[in-house]
Amino acid sequence: MIDKNPLSPHIQIYNWHISSLISISHRITGILNIIIITLICFWMAFLFLGHTNYELIYKFFGTHFGKFFIVSIVWSFSFQILSEIRHIFWDLGLGFELKTSNITGLLVIFGSFFLTIFIFILGRSLF
Amino acid sequence: MINATKKWIFLKISSVILVPLMLWFLFNLVYFYDKSYDEVFLFFTSQPTKFLFSLFIVFAYFYSALSISEVFEDYIKNEKLKNVANKSLYLFAITIPILTLLLLFKLSL
Image 1: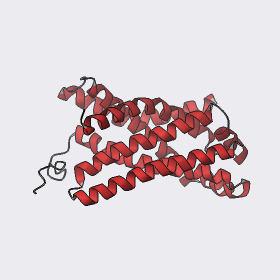
Image 2 (image 1 turned 180 degrees about the vertical axis):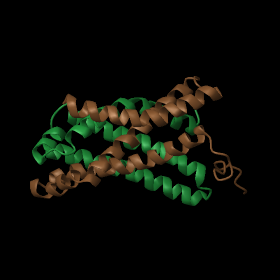
Image 3 (image 1 turned 180 degrees about the horizontal axis):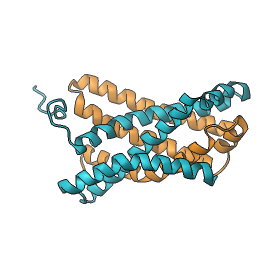
């Protein structure tokens, strides 16, 4: 039997728009985030291995790459949060107009950077 | 109700729950990532962190499994391959959180 279930549109042949950029980024960050969460689980497992083994993690986060890794994690989650909020508004039937969709798309892109900075400032000073 | 509708409802409910949990985790992550073993240990083993982190892990894997299976649905044409990919994904999304939660509760003993 021929499978008539259509696959996703060919992203290579369409012109890029803000909405398509956000859509593909939402999926990529979604996959990245599950990898990140798995790494966080391994990080927590390192606690189980004791003080000496945890030194490896402690030293890693002290490096520039370690700090860049944390900033990337926060950005990836921030993007996903804002993009998901955009999706929730769509599910409520709001923000479908082309102009609104483009504005909210830009808000997701730039907002993810602002949210990353905001989380760092507040997270480092609040606790 | 068809399966796709159920899946969509579960996806939306988990995303609404996950957004505040992600924010909570990120604020804490930027605080504790470069802290010593004792401070990180205390973070993971004290309440309400233990409860919130458990919720975060469960909902994060639940949400991710549902959303990644949508990606498989959109991009994998071969039905057998799609089934294997979905089953592997669900197995992974069940095993890792269970092991993590077991470790977390063992750590607190």
